[in-house]
Image (cartoon, rainbow, N blue to C red; front, side, top):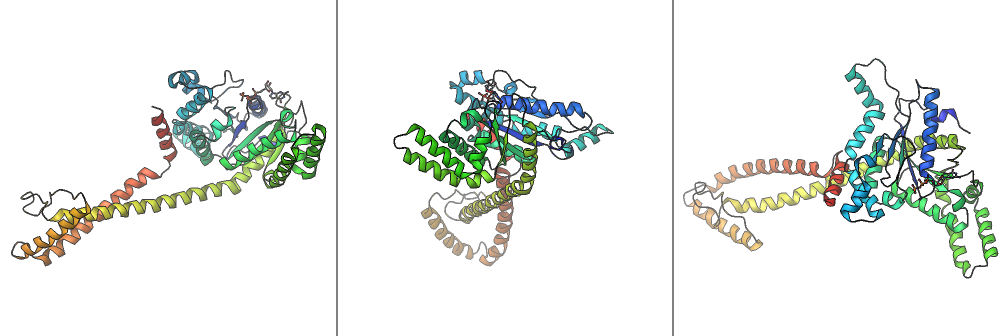
Length: 432
Ligand SMILES: Nc1nc2c(ncn2[C@@H]2O[C@H](COP(=O)(O)OP(=O)(O)OP(=O)(O)O)[C@@H](O)[C@H]2O)c(=O)[nH]1
């Protein structure tokens, strides 16, 4: 049962964000209510050392939430209005509401960091000249819409998840309706495949929560995961019972799947919970604690490596773009100096104001004219040697400055910590 160590995490480390994901009706909201109540109870028992959790509701379509939320998507987006205004169905309404909410991600993260991160709190403490530090929450709980695909596979879902994971150790709690999932092997396998796709899409540590264990124990499901032979035996039994036509194909597919999924099962923590009775909640928090350590050990370095790779790629792209632009500039600046397109008299005959060439043949024609002009200049206006000495250094300085400005502008455009916020801005604009 409940272990006290699991929920008495040192308040000085950042809280772990638990994102509850699961199919509609799997019991996410009831589970959220249960773990929220558990943490509140811990807070009441040790008010000076344990703070209540910080709670977010990201389900815009839920009618009522049976727990108090610190941040509720429904406060910023009216799901029904969104459906009406954009002429959308329920799923489109949820997706658009999430998109609209994700445009505020920088504000949401600002609040979360201020309320939950030790560094931010220390600054706040200094500002307010407080003697004692406030106890920080050890957990951030996040409820998501039942339409998993809307959350997990949407741009806004990715923005929300990656923003959270960049500031806090983040764990996915995948909630499974145990009685329904263990009805038969194919339902079980479908649910596992769903979980695997979420694991690979989010690349975050995951705890599988077999919910509703008061109705049916998780033992059978766990056995199917841990022991390949027991899954095969269940499969065989089903085939015999139903004597299904063509079940040979289905059976061999499920068999192969269970072998393939072995690796995936090993990467997961599995717990059985009853959100109704509270049984197994302590075990869940122990599993979360394990995953927090795993996040710091494996996921964060991997995340940082991916971010560094992306930075390198962006820098290479930037470099390429800048040299391409500089090449273009070279062509046009060469063509600018003199020639038939030069605006006569505008710069004392220097031809600085002439028109840009529009085609390659224009450029060639212009450079031929330049040669002619040189000859003309040799005739008395400017010494070619003199011009070579002066102009390249001016050009070089001009190009250097220009290159630096382009590079800075492209860095501004492509990278930086506000990239997620900008993507969110993009989503917002696309909604308009
Ligand atoms: N017996 C039992 N019923 C549960 C448990 N957890 C949830 N339920 C019931 O399952 C139903 C669905 O629960 P919800 O918490 O609304 O499920 P949800 O996943 O949030 O549903 P959506 O909001 O539609 O995505 C409700 O009738 C709950 O009472 C449990 O541990 N045991």
